[in-house]
Image 1 (cartoon, rainbow, N blue to C red):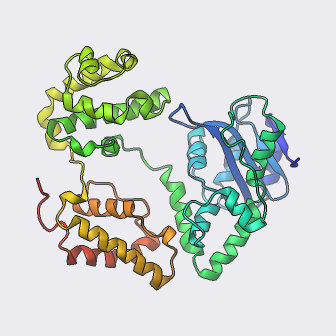
Image 2: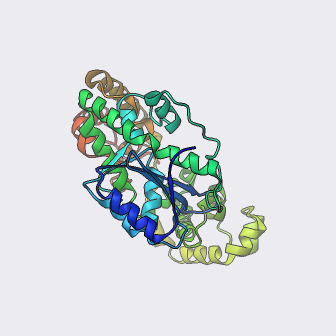
Image 3: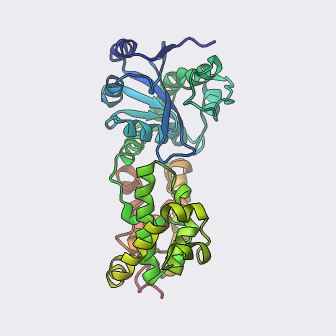
Length: 384
């Protein structure tokens, strides 16, 4: 059995946070459920100062503001592992920006231990302990939670403080600490950035096959689906799947029944959204000339002069940067990152990849631009 305190009332939470407010290092984790919702549904919040583990029930009748103030305090380093979804959950629950994050998975990447090292592996690496993950798929919304489930949740923050301190020392020795901190700041900022529904169509599978007025319809439908997913808190694909959205855009049905016959939509989808979809398509048709002018095409590097060659040269550059500067390949731009960077260079409206600033920009901007200019990438018009 692991020692922890279970908190499900305001008095205990206030007393716990008052004690934790004196800490400079707090390990934090969350358990949530997300299979059938757009937003994660909180099940449990875990926090430890290295001595006491506290398990907070976020669905009890308590105000979590006092806990969120700990996360927002720049004087307290918040240690998490693979923090992306945890941060998204905290921000959705009303927490402000986390100011001082140390993500042990990001640190592991900077130490050359792998790009997405699991908590199991990292605990085994630093503490020679094997932790079980049999409750990773549990329903964290059910009550009461079993002792085994609570033990499992407590383990997730039990070792993070000590791992953080060991990783920090290694990062200092390798002179990577400041770069790693930059990436942690980026992780926190990414989850508070403005939502741009207007570019949702760029992420629709096979969207590149739509063009002209069909692309205008796809953009309108993808934006509608994104907004609908937030309103009813359901995953995008539970509303309408990507390929169905694409078929509607291309076929341009004029009545709900044609969604069944021409686009192969399930009857329940037509019953639920048919009228809304047809209304959007009619509005798109009325403004087709405007759509044609405003909708940017979905790009592929094969459409751009020297695109594939330039991508290959950029990937080769990453290998050389790794060897020359001893920077782990795990933190250098991936193929997908480089593709997005090159697409943005070809069309400034195309979103830049995450992290184009700080150490990445200082290290990579000059050699990447040199490759682009040498290959005369995007020096000629897009192929039609």
